[in-house]
Image 1 (cartoon, rainbow, N blue to C red):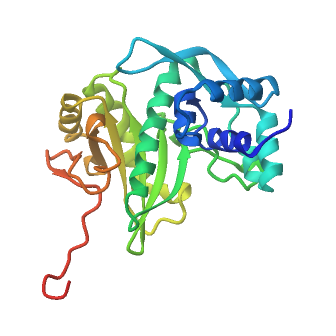
Image 2 (image 1 turned 120 degrees about the horizontal axis):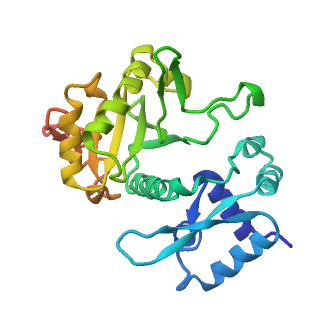
Length: 290
């Protein structure tokens, strides 16, 4: 099968996101198409050529009665991308079959990522420097045996680890800050989340191990963005975090308030003290010398 630039774009996009629905692929690669028919044909051809796999399970689409197939890359696709771009980091792209019980979580997480990336395009002051998902190796150019992931084992006895869903860096005014993402689908209670997640992040912060994941950071602290399904879970989780280790690390966000326009400068984050604030404070303008 002759591979076109449009094919490469689809494969490269999946390399970035790991798993996507057809609708998400179209939004990212071919937003100009009036329908998904031609894209479905292209995806079918890529599958037949051995570059894509369609997961046997489908994901339920929020707000609808339908379900959608999920696509991910194969090893030949990662090798094709490495050759096409002359970039060996593509060889470290995950081509593992995603767990069926995690498909909805992955699609929701990528939806959040897309909103964040769209928000970056609406302004020029803040830059999204780096994004790593939980199944992506952090140090892609190192020897395979030396590569590691965001998941960090902190203690054998008692067992303690930290397993972010994703991590990224925002740069602003000479500083680069690390953010970890926790995507919540409402399957555990706020109390369970606060009890299960906070110790690992607290120890990660106390040891400064976010610098291992993102050496480019200029700050000794990081934030955990907890993106949840509604305002109640946002508020209740923030309250439950208050008595847990390092509650200062956490910022809770109602998914319904998370839009490209609101992400950076609207007060959509809620901390453990019940205070709402924007993720990035607007640059103050000198009224006398604007």
